[in-house]
Length: 100
Image 1 (cartoon, rainbow, N blue to C red):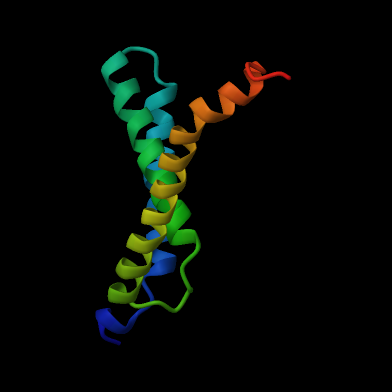
Image 2 (cartoon, one colour):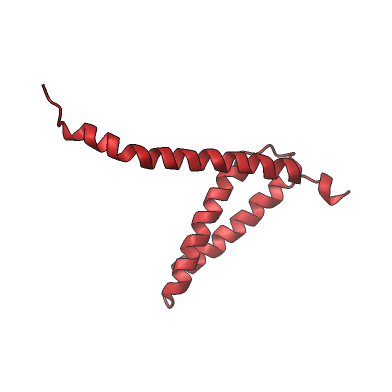
């Protein structure tokens, strides 16, 4: 079987779980704050990538998986940005500054 025709999604999920596990081990260690920071970054990035990969069709090839992952990550990024931009508006609604 050719590598390009094999589904990449199950392999990517397994790799992300291993990377996430390594990140958690780095977070759990107590002798180096620099390793802790690296581990935390690894866990965050692997989690975001896992959101995209976890929503892909299981039979997707590498090209389709990359394109769909990019679209999913763009949607997640847009939701984060919209949420951040809405914080001041929502906070002002809770202030009750315009009471009649």
